[in-house]
Length: 29
Image 1 (tube, rainbow, N blue to C red):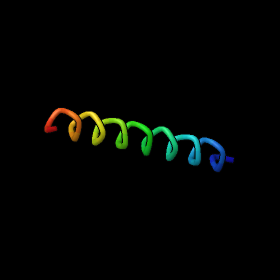
Image 2 (cartoon, rainbow, N blue to C red; image 1 turned 30 degrees about the vertical axis):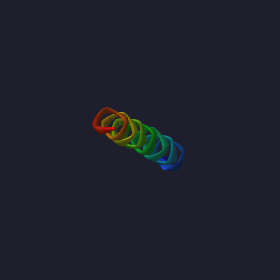
Image 3 (cartoon, one colour; image 1 turned 60 degrees about the horizontal axis):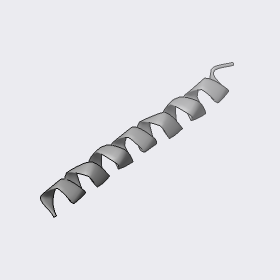
Image 4 (cartoon, rainbow, N blue to C red; image 1 turned 90 degrees about the vertical axis):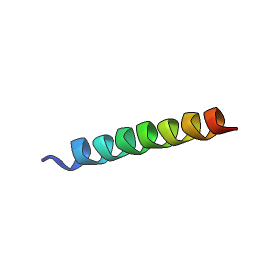
């Protein structure tokens, strides 16, 4: 089953995206 891997990938993707947006936002400020 790829369900667990799919959820884990989703969490990692969201974490990277959130971190990237956060750093960009802090950089602008």
